[in-house]
Picture 1 (cartoon, one colour):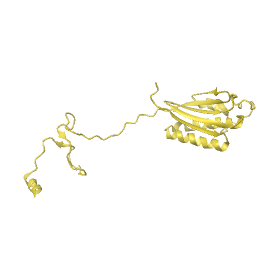
Picture 2: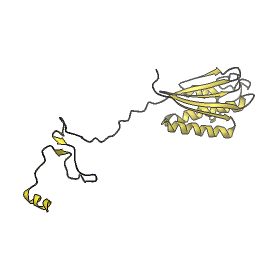
Picture 3: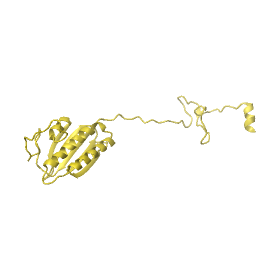
Length: 202
């Protein structure tokens, strides 16, 4: 049984060049908010590649949905479009495009699913109903070290063990300074010297 809730973000868009840049920034911002800065570059690159494929090849339209989900130690990124054709892998364009299309090794986009296969933990394609598909990939999410909360503790009541044995709650008024006063007050209060008692009495 999964005891931790997932973190999920969905963005619907037309896969146009201007929108691709916006979605890349949205995905990056969400990952930073989730403290997954180490995954920003790969996730943003993968989203850019998948949306570029939709822009170049999807028919009959460019509408699509980007989803990112963090579940325990795995981030899943997926793009769903309305074209049921399955894209080719290994530098080929999506089905319907020329398989011999040249790909520049130094290009920042357009390398298709080959680059996603290279950096992802796993990836795949599945049909979505009768008119669409989902292309997805996963990245391992680093598990943050559990932070130990920093707390300051006060002793209330008498203690029976530890360094505060025989001390009770400090009964000074609110706003009283504790500088130079030992923590707590002895169970048997100290008697003030006679000279001090005469000054206090006046």
